[in-house]
Length: 344
Image (cartoon, rainbow, N blue to C red; front, side):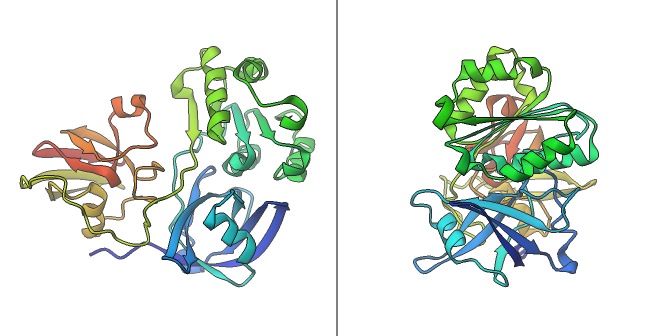
């Protein structure tokens, strides 16, 4: 059986961003740096200790930029009743170690040279600032950020955003939306802000009501869904650091075969009907990407080239993604006798 791909990261610094948000800066052992290479907008899945159940897994976006920052940084904002966020904000200290999976996620630009329209609210700024810093450092397009918060005291990275805007006045526009002043963001008012930039690549991250308003605003401007990326924050129910025992889904019907292309290599396996694709690949020492293992993050997304699979759960893919053949390996079981999958 393939070993769990997790590593221990040392906390080098704790930065208190606001009264209810902090950033954790990690040192990565030199032997594991290649494993922790990442793209702007990706996240880490960390194991948070728990007296009740041993540990829980939580996903936190990387607020550092691979093109600017030497060390990895995630930013954590407290949520009411949130065990992981409160434990980290209250108890983590310099010198502590956290177990983490390698970076994952698809909330990342295909090119940093594109013009970008970024919508963020609250802690949704975390992956977005990574994109902002990266695009300004290595790209040549314009970047427009609309950032919503309750009030001026809750603006994460306020100083850093101000400095970036001052250094890049012709490339970066930052629009702050404060609910204490302007009320809740609405689709029509967001559309009015976005209209001059409707041709840009759009990225949206924040609480569900904000994301719904931003999506409605972009749709009203006829921005194609293919030019809109969404990042949803989901609480993980399962623990990807622990291998769960597969549950039976019905009468066994034997095995299918699957051909998987990853990193330029194609391999063929027998695929038992009740086994999820990701579990099959990891058990055969295939280094397939994953994070949450419950269909909530899209880190394991791959393309169905031939055949048919059934996804047992999907909290992240849109209908358009599925129509294009995108499936979640962590939730896919075979339907047809032969299946072809590509990660290319």
